[in-house]
Image (cartoon, rainbow, N blue to C red; front, side, top):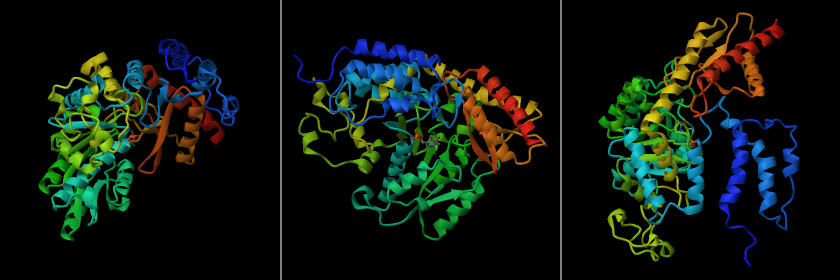
Length: 491
Ligand SMILES: *Cc1c(COP(=O)(O)O)cnc(C)c1O
């Protein structure tokens, strides 16, 4: 007789049952919820149960009430923000990790794949001589990179800032279109959100190098301490890449940490037509990318790459702890355990990723990235990235050819911003906002919106593995159709 009330075996049986409803969900046969009148909320709302029901009713509820009311993010026509559903192998691999290796530490195949997959990513994305560490998302990945920048900058002054604290205000330089996790990271690191110097962008949304130089020189002449120059390699709004080479050269001239935020856009380097845009990547001290964006991993997987990973260990060490250290043969701080002849997975912590970042407990993410790359290879990834870039270009073409549509910027990566425009429309921003709300209600094409030079734009971002060319044409047709109906009410 089992002592614990929880089921702890029969994974195959229950995964099969869940798998069936997940497949059904992905065929989009379910009644699409996402509307407030649905009854699922009533079905789920209850106070904490004192007595458990056993696993079967829980599986039933998952299958009938929870899964069918999941997210629109996985739909092929979903192009909002910069997020997408996981591919099948990513889903399966993360499930495998959750069962077979709950933690990324100790010397397991999973710990090994953490490192191997980071090296593969570095190779695939042309990050020569950089080592990585996974974290939960671009937010934390940026935090880790800027923690490295902080350590580097203060070590130049002879200060171990992680141990002793900040004794001098710093400045970092990023575009006004940079992701706001940069500001938050600075706040968390005790360096102040307001120390992010906002650099002007040109009409296409890229940093104006002259403004950067001017603001940097002024700060230096006033004795301020520049800590990092930050490139958005794929801005969140418009998907354009800042002048990477010029910014990297400037950073190098002043010996300032050079950070590339490629959370979304770094995989764009696989598209050789864009080679020039990524020139200067070799100048980076740190680079981040989110496999859970363009590469199709399950959410919760980002990577920070640096030239010197031991710097991260100095920035993020938690200091030795008896309950950890005492239990292994090889010291946690001997970071070369890969080569040692150890016989048991618990002989060593494996590669101590917990020392390079802010998470101790953390899932194995490497196995997911490894499995995705194994499945389709660099070639498969390249084809997907190029297809998505082509989709943004195709959107731009269709928009340009249509009298009632206006292109709001040439796409560089897989984002295209446009709007409905007709002389009869009185207020274009309000009109396009209404159009967008209606488009979302129809539930087939789900782009988000943004502002481009003050204009409300419809903004598809193509990163989904399920998204096909027909969804590009479908989106344009829907926008035109809804726009024309709205135009009648306008008159
Ligand atoms: C999405 C994004 C982030 C934040 O990443 P999360 O994974 O959502 O935390 C940071 N920077 C850029 C450029 C992004 O596009």
